[in-house]
Image (cartoon, rainbow, N blue to C red; front, side, top):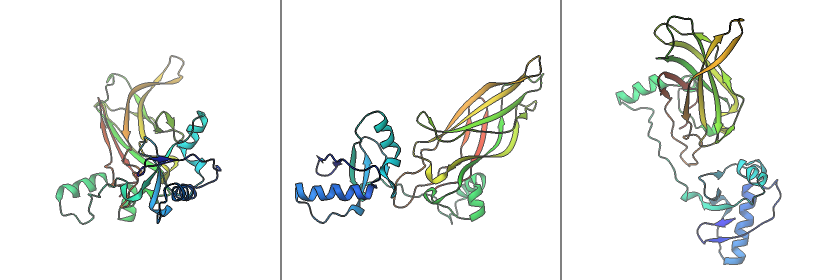
Length: 264
């Protein structure tokens, strides 16, 4: 562990069941002895991964944090930094519930989410215990042969780095119109609570085509891919993270999705 203010470091052998708050107490006690520092409370600090914008939040055994698991699996030594809670960057909310701005109203009406429509107010994703759900509305401008029947589907996955966070989900297959568009209005739900989605997670979408062989056997062929950055999720902040806008994607097609949960 390293102290960011005094540029000192300590090494501890701890139990895998120890929580971040318990480790902070040990670190501050060591500082008191070594540096004669007084009056520092564990509650005023947070553990940060050295070299990353990742923080240990919550009263959980330290082995449950992904950074600890990955470091131990690679035979490394976890390095954490104690940071004052006051020094953690905080995003200022910009979305007001009673805004008179017409553009803001249009944005809300266009990209309102399932959760917001039900509850009528904004929520922090830290408090959302429901599974992550988003809606595939429609795609357009698909480059397809208009002289034959084409069926496509959308395959979605949640990823953090190169790792899948949950089992991937897919829509039903739909026939593409002659204009190259297709509509679903279908919800895809992942077996992962919104509050557990890590920062820098990405929602990856793949459009695939169903093609039939001479024997009538169906096979899939990739049409296009798109990634949606979920970087807004879980920024540590006292005022709670600001909501990402529902994403619209466009390459040679247009994918319209609505996330079912937004952050405040």
